[in-house]
Image (cartoon, rainbow, N blue to C red):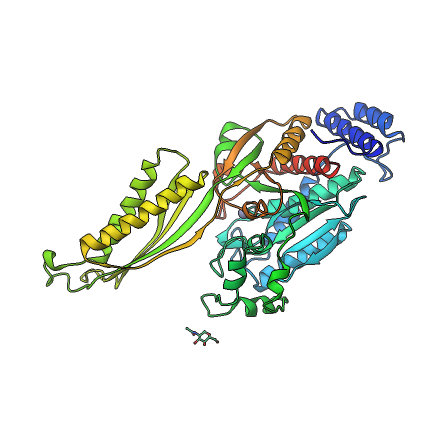
Length: 469
Ligand SMILES: *[C@@H]1O[C@H](CO)[C@@H](O)[C@H](O)[C@H]1NC(C)=O
Ligand SMILES: [Zn+2]
């Protein structure tokens, strides 16, 4: 549990906890008594001093989620909000507006990661941060990422309403471009914050599918930056003492098991590959079978090899997907002369994941030789390590769930998030809440006000606990 801060802040925190646990038990009178006893001053509900319960403004949060969803390039209920478009700029303005209303100090870095800071009594200490993203892939929903930004701002508001006084500063971060939609780079903002030099290099050259460069796109959104500025985004490793992300599960487990809170202990390690085969093509009638070197069949064989190598790992945690398989020229009477595959491989064990990638590479070479097609490209686009949640953050999340009488389950995040990269520069943890049927990245995505309120409370109490360490 938390190490002991000074006696006064410890006493206030103890009172604060008792208020919360009593409020969780719906016993406001008891909460009031214990709080008065420990805090040494009378409780009141009129905004002077701590209020007597720990209540999330669910209606306000839902209203904000609906308002943010209206900044979309596709009709409701779908949401489309792509990096540095007008809608993204409007969403950014909206988030900064709420941060200002809450009295947070707002800062933006060179690529538009947005930080809202509540200064603690010891501002020199590493801050406790939370946050997520508000960009949305085309025709997706309104909760992915958004719950971790607007919910985090409600958690801050809740702590302010409860008269909590942070020792370590608290920060809410809105990350730039978690989704890879525009430039093919996922978690762009947090990757850069994690200090990945290759990314800073590739951002100099990258263009979107309209041939607009990253730098021009950023400028159109109001972030005029020089190439040197990219390094200013890198974070110092002592900037944050903890980072916690609140997110919908994007899977069905919590809902199915009726558990309100997921405590993430690890984020699976993602990798993606691009592979191209080239053959001679030819007429589908005129070229007889022995004379062919069919690039399409090479791709088909490699797709099956991916499945085989993944299954051979022997672990249910190893997954592989060929999500893209394109044939050229794509005519019924033409032997494919080119094929293109994009392959996603993930595991919570990095070595096992890398072994699968190596086997895929060997299979690609072998297939190329056997079929007489050229392996014209075998490129690893990204090969990120997994991230483990930090024990100090997991302990604080468990403590919070227990105080709030909320059942929880420790689980692995198989999707990755900005937290994967924040883990490189800060102790990290994630809180999951259930979402309808596990749906995500589509308009049917939904989290109930009650589930969001639970997540906000666990986040608030986790941050409060870590703030006083
Ligand atoms: C993309 O833009 C660059 C720089 O303006 C230009 O040199 C290049 O020809 C363009 N490429 C395409 C495919 O339009
Ligand atoms: Zn997300």
